[in-house]
Length: 264
Ligand code: ADP
Figure: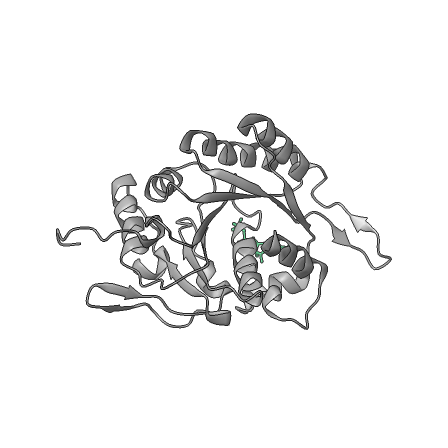
């Protein structure tokens, strides 16, 4: 940033009314970004002003999921975020790396980038800022905890035992960073078959296991906020930039479960 002093992060101002929620998972592919995008759309549906910071340096999927078509504008050193479905303001680290290239930044550079995306972006008055975190417990998780000490954590897992174990680890860094874990979302919990029965494609119990262990470890109740089924329309909605929770007429079980999370 050319040596100019860093701007204050508005979410840390005393009296800031923005809830900052970092959405994390132990490993990739469990639907963390999908849950983030759908939660954002569900929150907008409830009349809230929402921003999403895509900090998942291993795969930037939020802009596509939220229908972002424009690049951010930079005016007088302030970054104006493009707006997606329902007016959601979106900034992705992917908007600042050349197309098709991976982020190979080391910790300090990532930290500076995150600092800018929090302090130099014109977020306006948000009710909620969701941060799509990279899976695991790496540099970004540490930086976000330092930059946003008041942020909360939402853990996404699948029912699978292996996913649950790593998700627990991602959640438990909260004990060290003093961030509050607000709950767990179990995704891909089951597939509803044509006869109405549930096929447990990835097994069962992951969400329960993570909530139980985090509750024991953190010393307060960490609730299981939802079990979101496998749902073709949810996947299609992400692919075409219109989350299922954004469309009132689309009342699938997955959308309903995520609207519940948004209200919780
Ligand atoms: P992560 O952010 O954890 O890596 P993604 O959100 O990118 O995971 O999801 C991985 C893939 O699974 C995507 O193609 C997404 O559309 C799909 N997906 C996620 N959740 C569901 C679900 N409940 N039903 C169907 N497909 C899903």
